[in-house]
Length: 388
Ligand code: PMP
Image (cartoon, rainbow, N blue to C red; front, side, top):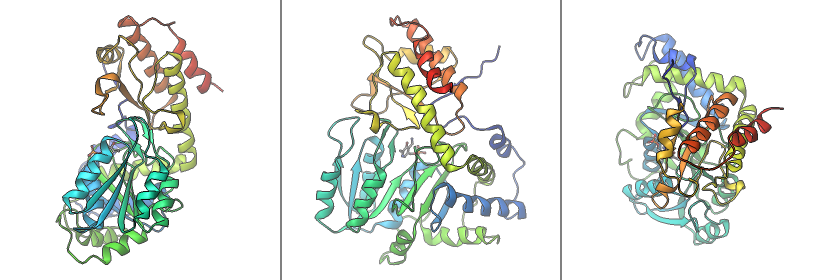
């Protein structure tokens, strides 16, 4: 019997065989002509996936937190004001990083876990003036809450702040149109909807972000993150010229190029719709099974993951039983509700059968912990949406 588990956590996700094959190829020199070609193509493709035709991509070895660090280190200087639109755990982290670079940080927080910071409150803080940057966590992975990035970015632009979007749990899954939505810098990491094993920080800086970088008074206070080091490298690879600053993650970048090719072959519009459909089916199953969700309303629920509450009398032992039924899901992360809910990622190459299998495993787990429900209720609700 196969003992491989289906990985349905909100990153790392399941990767396609072609991506994993690229990871396993013999590693070449970072200046081998075919690697230069793969890196150059990946940079071009990132603009298309972020929907940011005039942006400057940066691909640097590190996790999503490095991408956060790159954004903060290059865009803010000591004493400048930053506004964090705070929708959870990863917004707190962004605030900490901004403070590390000397920014004076104001948080506008959601009124409750599972809610979003009100637009009016964000606007009244921006009205005070003088904010250099405003950061948003597009999808907060701790709550499965999605913010209205388009409306928030419009406000940021109106009041002259550079808009920075943490798209680690959104880019290439949740609808995100960087240039059209006036987002000055967006970033993600390889292991989520981009579909590549962990290890790459991916940043797309729009023209206003690059201008702000050019106008800095002080050097960037982080050597590895400094665009002054990385910009010539990105430009060289895109011009198909050899170049070196820090050794690139050769196999990860080859895998990135493969995955971006697959994403663009599907097409961004089709990809947004597929993520929405998978999410609708999964969420319908969770509701049919009688479980609530962390986002306080359906329009605040992300399409890349779902955060169901445990039903009364059920705790995290449920996750062990779901795993025994073949599916790995994640526990809670938000400190205020950590033991009350779990998280299921459904992004990237996720298929209809992954959704059905996951719902089946959750039903099996719920039955094992003694929860009373009609077996098959969740599956029927998911199939209702998945079967045309
Ligand atoms: N931001 C968000 C929204 C995330 O979900 C994560 C990771 N789950 C991060 C930032 C940090 O990324 P990493 O764990 O790759 O450092």
